[in-house]
Length: 299
View 1 (tube, one colour):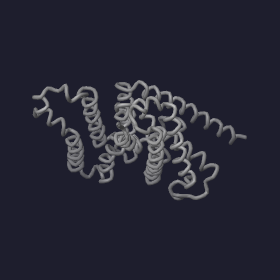
View 2 (cartoon, rainbow, N blue to C red):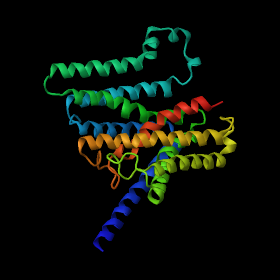
View 3 (cartoon, rainbow, N blue to C red):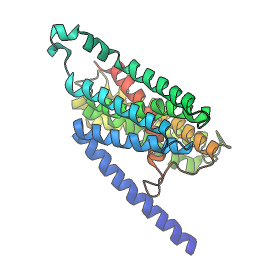
View 4 (cartoon, rainbow, N blue to C red):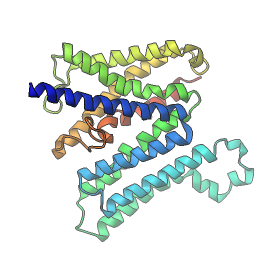
């Protein structure tokens, strides 16, 4: 009896958290622009902190280097998306100025700064940090900062108000379908030591389910999507399926990191779910893929 009550309480906590999380996500996606940019920047910094905490650098100078470079990247994206919105409005002389040329290379400059400053911290404070800690800070930029920003960048694309939902169809939609199918039909384990509950049947169910959700979504908004795609139903089915494969790999990769470090969750921010990285582990991988596919498939 007590076990049933605990299970019910656990379910209600997860359910309430899911409802709140979905409400925030939907509001941010619908509003887009500055609101979405701010939300993505905030959850990115939280996710980065959770990752750094795994190796114990979240409150150390190496961690603050990572946070600072992340903010620098936010500024780079902000300028690109909100200030330099149309290259044609930039004066010819500005377009050929040293300042603008520097800006055009700023992404590479950001990466170089991250690496150089991190190595400087590593050398000047030796032996305060081990190589794994420094590597994790550098890795965090590519694992957390850049991928999450692709949610915003996808929303900023032409037709992004409709296509950005593919990120969540391929991640959360896929997760749900994989769970349901795996629970009912799952027999063939694909990574028993890493995720004992993950099955081949569930994986296939997630792929097919995400494709079907993509088709249904495309049918509902077909009149709008026809403006951007020659065959939106096929595009959304393919993107849903591809996204599902990528998101499930991302989910297991996040589990592998946690298993290596002997932790259950990255954080406790979202009751019943864990931290930002626990809930967005599949989104992190799929967001850049959806952005790429939308650029490939669009008219």
